[in-house]
Length: 115
Length: 116
Image (cartoon, rainbow over all chains, first blue to last red; front, side, top):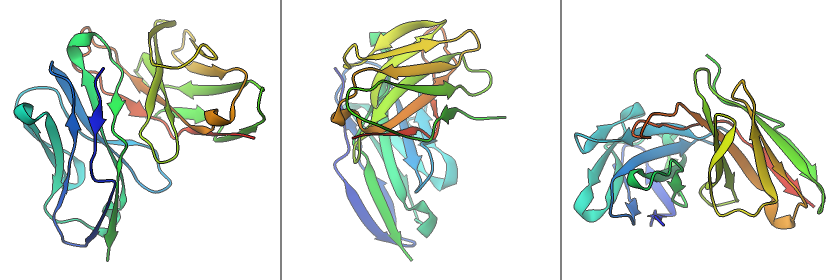
C-alpha cells in the first residue's frame, strides 16, 4: 500500500520568506498528486494537483509544486509567504494503476507565518 | 454553486451508541468518499460510493457503513461507538472519470464527532 511522508510537522517563517514543504510517497507506479490546505476554521481546499505533463505545477495563491519521479517527491513551494498563508498543508497521493480512487494523505505540515 | 455540505456540524455521543452523518455532494458530482481525520493527523479513507454502491473501502471495521441515494447524497453510519471514533469526519465529492485519471476530490467542512 502506498504511504505519504511529510517530514516537516511544524514550520515557522517570517513574512516574505520563501517556503518549501517536503512530500515523499512510496509507490512505484503511476500517481496523481495533490496539495490541500486547511486554513484555521475552514475546510480542506485544493491548492494544486498533478496528473500528467509538465512536472512543475502552478496552483492558487502563488503556490507551485514540482513532481520529481526519480525521487518520489512532490514538494510545495512559494517564493514569498504572507501572514494569510498560515494554515495546515496536506500532501495526498492517488495510486492510479491500482484502480483505487482513494486518496492517501500525509500527516500534514502546520505553517505559521509571523508578521 | 454550492460546494460539498455536511450535517450536523458537531455531534456528541456516548460509547455504544450509533451515529449517522450526512453529506450532499458538489453540484454535478456523482461520487462520494468519506474520510476520518483524527486530531493532528491527515485524513484516512473510509470508503467511496458510486451509483449507490460501495466501490472501495479502507481499513475500517464493519461498524462503519454507508449509503448513497439516487440524488448522489450519502450517509455514513457508525455503530457501537468507541472512544477512538472521536474525530472529524470528512466527505469529499468528485465526478467519476472512466479511469480515475482526472478525479479530483472536493471536501466538505466535516462533522466533528465526540464520543464520551
